[in-house]
Length: 251
Image (cartoon, rainbow, N blue to C red; front, side, top):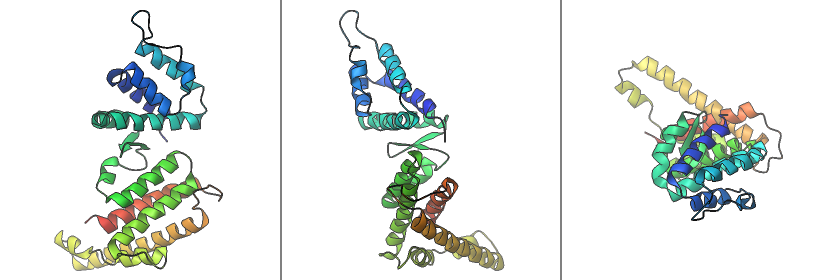
């Protein structure tokens, strides 16, 4: 996971450049910072506090937070900033990308999980579930990550079939059967035998992936975090979910 401190440094620079003293206080307050720690810093006609002093005090305050609370604070600051100044999205996206972070629907996500540009191509409902899965992974809710990732695939299946499958795997396989893979490959000039072999293996891989996700949902998926989880498998579930959603919905 990329360092949250680097994300804060990027957001801090934009707060300094684009937000007033009062708005900075509002943003960090809504992000959960105890504003009583900043109460002594006020703007006055003479000898008032500067934005630099305010931001330095915020630095000190978040430095006292535990890592989980610090990460949550930075995530919420990004969301509050973009709610107030949506035009900052493009600039922040470029700046955050240098440090391994991206923005999707105003949410801060690690680029190692998904490419925000690729996510933007997906239909709204499954994309929302994928973003939710990434947020949960980022925040350490691994069981909830699996549940949301499977929910994204459920949404994609329902958009194709008009209903959910009798089981997760059955629904994935029925929805996948509606996708024409042979035609586009033939259009690329692939010979028929290669197309047949490739398509068969691709369908088999998706069938196995559906079984993997179905099993993970049953054994590890839990928004309350009560089931034991293996983190590498959660990461795999995210990647499988994106593959399923893209295969079923983007043509």
